[in-house]
Each structure stands twice: as structure tokens, then as C-alpha cells.
Length: 186
Image 1 (cartoon, rainbow, N blue to C red):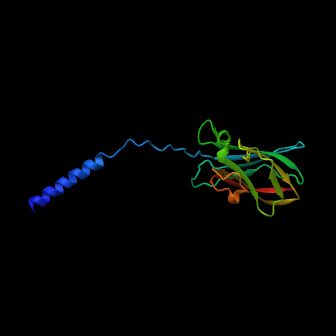
Image 2 (image 1 turned 135 degrees about the vertical axis):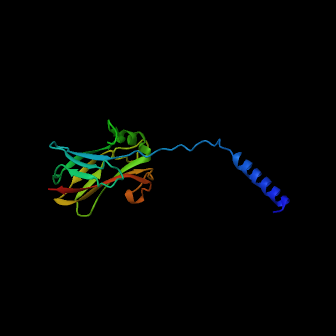
Image 3 (image 1 turned 120 degrees about the vertical axis):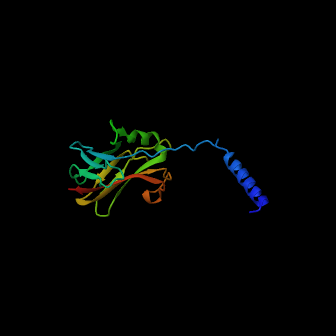
């Protein structure tokens, strides 16, 4: 190999190494707002006229692991009844369990709960608690049953939805958690 070509190659390699080594590493790191782990969703429905509360719970202690969530419904809903609803979110992989609901409430403008049913279930939700901008948050709500029916009731928490919106279909954002329960109205 020609000495001139070899020397030129060595010089180019050295300058390239120096240029790469001198790059700025002083860039501020991008803050990471890590998503909280939600293992348990509990919806408590208390009849407004008194009576026994119904609890819907989805518990998925292995998160995205291989096990399906354990879904429990403590009883049937009464027809033609209004219930006061409340959602509690927990991370039960730590002791004591983290109450994620308080974090969602602190960041209310960045979250919204949505309650959806399939066509066969006769119930509606309304009167959601509001964020500081008077948009629905939905940690608390009213659930009103109609005629006897059975179907699915899904609770979805969206992070950074478009507010206001007309429902889950146009809310955008990312789903933090979604739990589906089979519910019977008698």
C-alpha cells in the first residue's frame, strides 16, 4: 500500500474519532413521566335509596404477564335503580398498595374515565365529577339501570384525551386501563 494513502487514511480516521468524541453530551435529558402500573380496578355501586353495594373488580397482579385478570362481580343490579358509582385504581405489586386514583385525580385534566356497554345491557351513566376546566373526569358518577338485561359494562381510563369530547370514540389519548365486566340487571 502506498505510504501517502496509508497516512491519509490514518489522519481521516483520527479526525473522525476526535469529531465523534467531542460531540456535546451536555444535552438535558428528556423527563420521563412513567406510566403507573394499575393492577386492580374496583367499581363500587351503591343504591341511592339505600341497600347493598355491588362491587365490580378486575385484578391482574402480573400486569402484562401471561395470566388473565380475575374478574368478580358481587351481585346483580336492581332494575329501575340509580347507583352512586366510584372507581378505585390500585397497584398491588407493592406493599402497601399504591392508590393510583389519587394520582389520576391530581392530574385530572390529563385523564378521563369512560363507561360503555354493549347493546343488550340497559343502563346509562351520568353526573361525572369534573376536572378544573369543568370537563368530565369520571372517578365518581351515577349509574341508572333500566329493564332486566345482561351484558358487558366496560370501564376505560384514557390518558391525555381530547377534552371536551363526545365519548370514547373521539377522545383520542392512550388507554391506561380497560376492564370489562359481565353485569346482570334484574
